[in-house]
Structures are given as C-alpha cells and as structure tokens.
Image: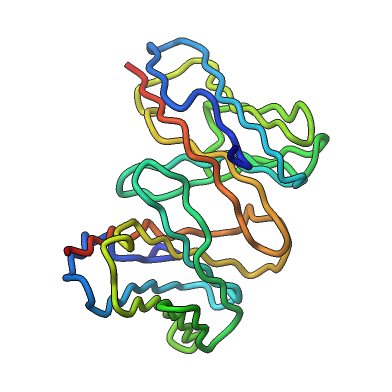
Length: 111
Length: 114
C-alpha cells in the first residue's frame, strides 16, 4: 500500500459543484501539503499544514479550502468548481529535513 | 524573472547517452537543492539532494550545484529507457522548516530511446 493515498484518483465534475479530494498518510508525518500541477506551470502550492491546528495558505489558495481532520488526514475542497481548476492535484507529506513524499495524484476535470 | 527556470524540453536521447538537465535560479539565499523524478501518471519522488555548492554522486546520477552562477545540474550517465520521466528541480533556503518555501522548476521531460 502507498504511504500517501489520494482519493479519488480521477474525477469529472460540473462547474459550480462542490468537490472534495481526500488524502491519508501512514508515514506519521506532521506536515502535509496540497499542490496542483498544470502543463507549463509546474507544481504550485495550494495549502499546507504543520499539524492539526495549523493551516497555511500557499501560492494559489483562492477557490480552495482544506481540513486537517487528523494527523494522517488532509482534505482539499473546491467549494464551487470552475473549469480553470482542471488539473492534477497532489497531496504530500514532509519527512526529516526537506524531503517531500507525494501521493500518486488526483486528476480533476471540471466541465 | 522567475525564481527558478527550467527548460521544459522535451529532451530525447538514445540509450547510453549522457544526459544533462539544468536549472537556474535568482534567489541567492537558496542553499538546499533537490531533483525529483516523476514518471507518467505518478507523483514526483526524490532522486537527489544536495546542500550548498559541490557535487553529489549516486550510481549513474550526479547532482552539481554552482552557487556563484546560480546554476544546478543533474547528469545521468549511461541513460536507460527506464530513465524516461519528467525531472523537476526544487530548492529552498531552509533546512527542515516549512516547505511552504520550497520552489519547484517546471520540469524537463526526458525520453531515452532504445
């Protein structure tokens, strides 16, 4: 089993719908991250969390919200999805030092 | 000027070639430099990690940092088809701190032809 698990792996949703991407990890790390990846734009940080009580905005947080339900769980929500939120989304955890461990990604298409 | 610049490629080489992947950056405070490898439809995984200037070797891979030129490189010797992936550079000025300050390059797509 993967150390960082994302669900769903693929999702198509309609404009205006609310959608949640879930992430769980078995690495025991406190720090968790949500990134999106777009062709030509690379990886961009949406939100990050140091622990259950600490949530921080990243570079592109507008239109997104997060919830850290437990040390092992960090979910990303799009309250009202729009087409330019079509992207590949990655959850990640931070281990010792600067090492980031990524999940396998969630492909989201907003039509 | 972007903080981190990386040629997106694509780069296509024959099997056995030496591959050179590069990033330039503008923030002289960066001290920790990483290379991630991302296979198609997978998440990035850490490949190499270096601190400050100098070289680091791991098997067929060598990471090189030239802080005076603000330039980092990843060399792959005897490239294999299994090396076909997108390679992302990443860098930060903090050790062990929040990776909210970790900056990624856009990635270079490499294809190694048999």
